[in-house]
Length: 125
Length: 125
DNA sequence: TATTCTGGTTACCATCAGGTAACTACAAAA
DNA sequence: TTTTGTAGTTACCTGATGGTAACCAGAATA
Image (cartoon, rainbow over all chains, first blue to last red):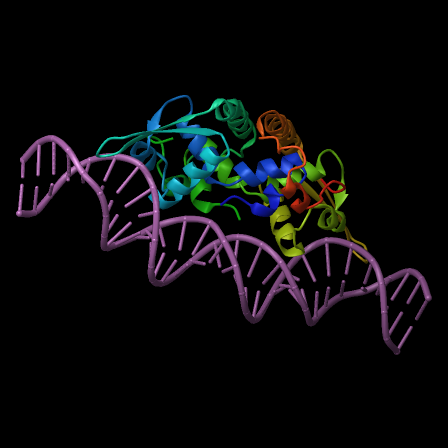
């Protein structure tokens, strides 16, 4: 899910996009935010993600230094995730994306039909 | 290349990621920046993109209101692209991603071997 | 007359992302 | 004894992604 060619670029921006420029990572970072959260919680909170993909993304985020993983030697296992300094420093960028989108996204016409077809993520994200 | 499920979310942030959260769009927006640029130029400047994918991305960016397309009725055809107000408003976000990456990206060890394997995008991006 | 130039589009094909279901370990509870 | 719970991993399969090459118009140039 990382783009290897982008990550091998010698343009810093291209490398950044190769690392975090996919659809799941910003969502996951945003869901974690400033809290500490377990794998199972993420799996149920992040909308529509599968355990397989979630595990992959978390591993990459950890490898890239955005995430800290704390595994307790217990049974059943317990693992906690939280953002590193680098990950926390990315949150303001996510906030500005939110602001940008709120400001510029084309507002649906009032009563527009396809509102109904929107999946309800209200409780989740 | 747009994620339809994300775009149908009723979470504004998820919709934003569904729209611009792929690897090519940030790169294209960054390459265009504040200038007016033709299709052929983009095709040669954006590293490793194919005409097909470039055309798709440009069309989506236009549909999503980030891009303005100006087609001159000439032969051979001439088409110019430039960012809309919405697109321009996204540039500072790209800048903060650059700053974030420069600050936190793990610096390669001096003289590290795999530097050589990095594709040279220096002239392009 | 043949070639070039531009901004695409189309068909075809290979690769890849990502989903599902089954499986793991081991302890505690039923 | 069977079930439950956690955090994954694995094999398998399908649909989406994205690359390549060919093709288009029609004027200008050689």
